[in-house]
Length: 78
Image (cartoon, rainbow, N blue to C red; front, side):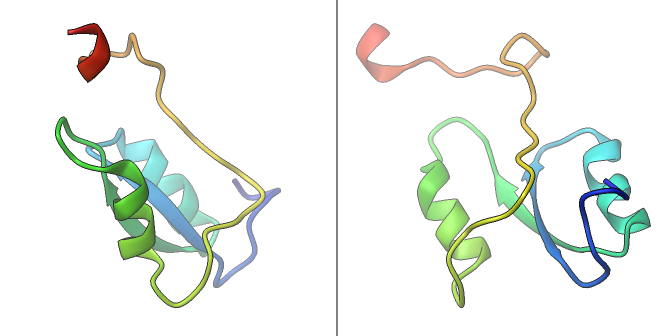
């Protein structure tokens, strides 16, 4: 995170997340915006809600692996 973020950058962090997702960006001096990632929530609407004043873009995308203890069922495969 220190190599890719500048002080004042905004980082969209999944919620729930591991603490390192939040504090790695905080240590680098970035601002944190939470993005809900729970079953039944539209991920893209949450992205827009987290950054209403500008498009979502950035040099880094962090995501947890699907087998990390969290998962959802795809509606077409239910």
